[in-house]
Length: 559
Image 1 (cartoon, rainbow, N blue to C red):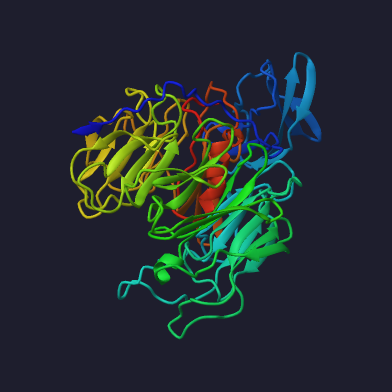
Image 2: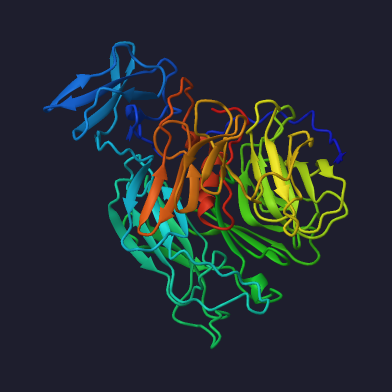
């Protein structure tokens, strides 16, 4: 069964939700036609007083009519008195007592009789996005989108027949929340088509209220006759999120010293609040061997450098993702680079020495113990602990798989999907043996073996309860009752709380269209916008690079 190792952590207090300079978010009212009429939902913000209440208004013949008799404590409402063929405009207004304290932007919807469970953002051509970055590009309090296209990826792994030259160049494209196209930036032939060659993120790093876009870029056309890019200048570019114009650049981490093309081609970006107050840019090169990590401020000035060479316990401990989280409760973010963690000052905090993990998720998985945990699925063969849970503060194993593993693969899953077990459920499995996959409780108990036909199911807050639902392929399933709630179309590119209330959106891309699937399920639960939790927000920022890892809150309980 499982191997349990308990560490002493009684002196480590439960971490509070850290305050940080988040985006100045608006109410983000969304109106979507549904079978019952028009479903409306909006944000409850961290700055809202607890006694805030809401009224819904609908505009008719240039006059606003109030639809709610009594003020609402919840952040959703269904207008059932609508007619097919008519268009309606809505607004939510906030009150404290009898005093109005704010109004949302107006939103419009036309009743077609054919409701669709998503918001559509047309793209500039019949291509698909490979990745999407989510940030406020124009400072209006709404989240906008920066996509990378085309949807094509080649890994730098050099096995014969595996790698192939890029048929095109990557382009970054920016769109406002209402679908307005802003700009395109062609990364050119100095960047190969693969997620490891050109990580990018969008975030307000200079504090001007509008997000910048940060991307790894090259210069000219340094391709070898084979199509490989193995030389030439490499840069970290900062682009203005509203215009796409370059603001500044600094050299990327050098290729020199890496063992081969495969290892030199693994690149990452992240945002971290290293001082607890301001966003810093993190860039990383290397996963399987040599690992270098640089921290830069909002002006792209380097504040520290970290290197894990062969003499370091962190050598070869990298993952396919990069997590920023306050693992030690000091209000500052650390960097979980895989099976090792870097402190906010750039020094190694700990290394498990378990090896490269394919699955690496940082969350409050076991809420009855203090602090955060990390769930690992280790790729190299191991006699034990190939699947394990460790304390994020120390890297010490809490429980581990006591049987040999050969190659734990893909991104796994960590989410509370079962109300019968306290904490989050954890899922991982073997690459070469589909029947060898396991759903485990936060205590390491085996809840299910096999039965989930993917090594990377996704989990989404969607209905009216505290548990997430499982997205398996195109089907969103309420796990506890095995009920299908939704079918999606297209390539999955994101999961995040970006519009409406605290439930999450599922972002996909079909040819020529970005789709934002959003729930129309009423709920009596009111929770703060998830994007105002720092760890969750930074997880969304990192979602546009590396392996797709859904964001995680800093605490088990919803805010």
